Length: 63
Image (cartoon, rainbow, N blue to C red; front, side, top):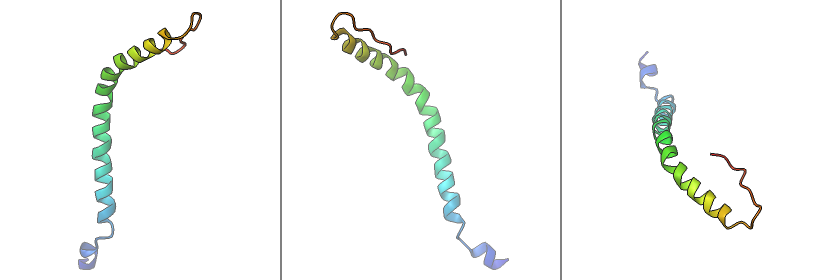
């Protein structure tokens, strides 16, 4: 039992899994907020690009 408690082979895996779960939680919280911020920016760029297009060009891109 003492040898089992002193063995640290699985400790690194547990630490990596904890870091991964924290990172995924952070991404899950941040991405929806970023989506709201980036949507108007992308819309502006899409309209700017399609405005420079010669007459008859249509943008099929939908947000």
